[in-house]
Image 1: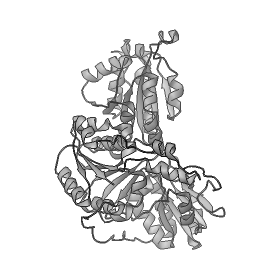
Image 2 (image 1 turned 90 degrees about the vertical axis):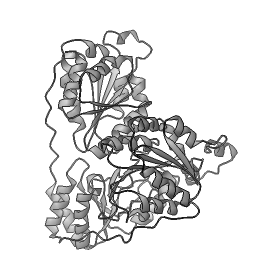
Image 3 (image 1 turned 180 degrees about the vertical axis):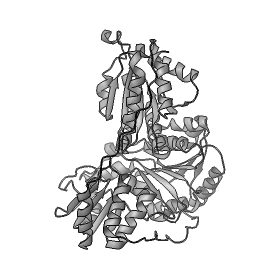
Image 4 (image 1 turned 45 degrees about the vertical axis):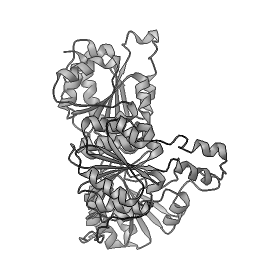
Length: 513
């Protein structure tokens, strides 16, 4: 058995059964092992940032890591943007990165790079195998690292001779690390603050914005009068009927400071203290009042459900039903507006849909119009590096085994970062509906230009404009094997959404706004 074969068998033993790949020469023995050993679902991505983004989306829905296969340092570098997003989303991923043979590396061949340093910028665990005999054990360590709460990026660098040399040994799965214990003093302190009836906010993130924890948080809020909000960068929320009608902390610093100004206490459940996405001249970096007391109930790596359960018991908070959001919205008609678009999504999405939201500026008011939609999962861009919406949607569809409709609410500029995702959707015949918000400009950057106090002129506006020539999204989709059509009003949008939901495979709608 060579090292590559021991790697594949170890991954399978450790319940890693999906590999998103863009291989090269250094990884050919790994590719051969994947071909010879049954059990691994191999998914080809045509660019590495698509590969890493798919692994992120897969983890969020499947709840377990996938492997990626990347070609040397430059291939890893191509995937760093979405590995950054995955790290911020607390996604568990096992990166397998091929590298020069151990004896070839000192010769500084053209593809030689400092792969280890590149990996460490986005990985919580990094290791380079040096012998084929160690590859299986190193893979088991990588899987254990990726499964460490709340989900971590593990990168195993595999020189090509460690793959092709004989001596590989299959390693047994390693036990997953246990969660760090709760701090009982934090529970007691949170209860004391909430009993005081001072104005308090419970800020939720991570597992605490998923359905089981939401019910506990609502009981606490109803018993104490505290407010609930989600961290703006929460990567995966349970939403729709039967779930809390949570709002996020606003993105805009002025709006966030206004929303948080009333709170004397902010209790953090898997969340960080709210800070601005960027610094702005003359504005504070923090979004909460200077006199607000911050209290950490749980860190992201701790058990939010256990902590909220302990707080419910400490407060003796009675059961409280989740509020009914009212009737589901009707399908809208007329001219396209952000509110009308959100209403269409809320009115028409199928049961158990998955929303991949990279709508950026256009989608910040979407939440109220989808509270009464059927129960669904909403995935957000967590790290701010645009270009994750389409890959995350693709990986989520695979994580759901193709059994759930995935709807991408996708800004046009960021879609161009990872357009190749459409090809993978077509190859895998995934139930993905992509709605391109086609305003033909980087709207978020126009807003940020104003936020920093600058006045854009012609040169600046040309750099923020996506026209001249206009992007033809239907042609781009067709070139990737995906059917597409244009909607210029809400009536056409709703008709096309219904059409797409009836299809087994992918469909793209260009929504002119």
